[in-house]
Amino acid sequence: MALTALELPADDWLTWLDERASAQLDAAQEKVGELVAAEPGSPRILTLWNDAAIGLRNAAAVAGLLSSVHPDAAVMERAEAIEVEVQKYSTDLHLDPEVFRALSSVAPDGLDADARRMLGKALRDFRRSGVDRGDDVRDQVRELEARLTDLGQSFSRNIRDGRREDRVPAAALAGLPADFVESHPADADGLVTISTDYPDVLPFLAFSTDAAARRAVATTFFNLAWPDNDAVLAELLRTRHELATLLGYAGWPDYDAEVKMIGSADAIGTFIDTVSAAAGPAGEREIGVLAERAAADGETVIDAANWRYYHELIKREQYGVDAHEVRRYFDFGKVHDGLLRITGELFGLRYTRVEAERAHPWHPDVTSYDVAFASDSRPIGRIHLDLHPRERKYNHAAQFELVAGVRDRQLPEGVLVCNFPRGLMEHRDVVTLFHEFGHLVHHLLGGDQAWIRFSGVATEWDFVEAPSQLLEEWAWDAAVLRSFATDAEGAPIPVELVERMRAAEEFGKGFLARTQMFYAALAYRFHLERPADPTARMLQLYRQYHLVKPLPDTHFYAGFGHLAGYTSGYYTYMWSLVIAKDLFSAFDPGNLLDPGVAARYRDAVLAPGGSKDAAELVADFLGRPYDTDAFEAWLNR
Image (cartoon, rainbow, N blue to C red; front, side):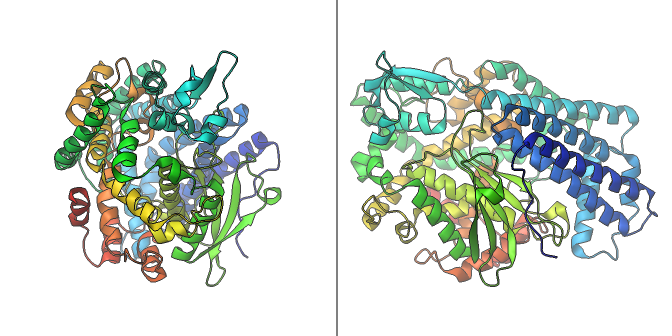
């Protein structure tokens, strides 16, 4: 029988959520009971383990999504409670000696490669959880894991619900696009409201000519979730360290890095410092250019309130790239449709719109599409696009899982959650949309796995950004952009404008790489050191890595949401970029729409999901191990 997408409720999401999560958790518990009772060594043990993992992951997926996007506070809060239940059960499961003994009884000999890999990964997870420790240690692990779930939710919730606003003079909108001005009318006092939502704050910091207003808005933005998250973060870092050391690791970064490509905490520090040193000379030159231009306006330093403004000014004055001119080619609807068409051509996919009457999305903004292979109409899965901001919604950009694909069992479903404007987009937003869509395609194409452990974006975590960073390249190609980027009269974006955009994008690579390394160093060092004064340590790391000065009395770390999910591993963005640049070297830059190379990439890198190590996936595609040559050439050109 053909598989169908998960049926979402037309109403009463609260009841549906409870039933979906309860049924999946009950199924997981039932299969675990059968697993423990099975004859030792029976291959059926692995099948039962897979069944249990499917139930657990299904429950986690729906709770993780709805806790971040559902407009009903009651549904959001219930989803958060289910996340706690799921994590508690997962912790208990991985600390259960009987389950561990049952899995350990299965001999790897005689298993096929995927089953053998899955068994090895599962047993490693049990050992990393402390299943082979004494009862007292396992009890402590349970308590610490429960506390970490609560703290992680609190940290993210404070960011999500901590939206703030500034009221600035209407004259401060000078320099902003006309549609931005129109959507921000002045009140009776002649003031306009600028929120900390990305579609508000980022354009304002990039284009407002009012330096004082920019400083006020930036100060508010970089104090998001402060001081609420100070105590939460301190306990989060302390609890992660306590768990890691309890399990025999030097600290959280070593525990976390053990299952990543990078392998160790020391290697993280070395990587951060290596990239910082490589980017330093170019970054210093670029900051010098910004500072020289800012001095003409009486500014004495490049800081968090003005670097975006002067970066845009340099692009306009020295490279002939006016962001207002550029954005008129990027109507959201055209970009949306163009992205589907381009990825359809690249990867041999067909997207079919599922009307809301059948899809039953959680919000009217959400659009849904069934995805199939264009060649034979074979179903792949379903995607849901939730792309505009609203109150209490997750306020960054990410791909969420709704269903993990399992061969002959369930189709993969992924959700793109972003916060883009509804009208004209900045080109950086277009790049972000391509990036996040890369995760979505990976989730779907990697979803045809027998073992749910390998379904979707299931590689080592420091590889997961590479496919998304690779897809960004298509958002910079003139031929690709001209296929959908047209102005109101239908004229496509000029080739020469795209060439100027690409040249302007080269300016800033150095200091922006150093910015990324500041983020990476903060995530790594905060976990390694657990500073008693996070603000003071943040400022030290600013001086060591960042080439842009911080604003006084701001606390960026409190709103740095990646500290919850990526923990000490923010370095992964740059690590993945090294690999993405190498992957891109296999494509013909003169014909990025060549479906032959893209199909080979799809089948070698995306479709296997996590069934192979990331380094092996890359070698399968490139025909050699990955290296840093392409990245270094890009950074230094």
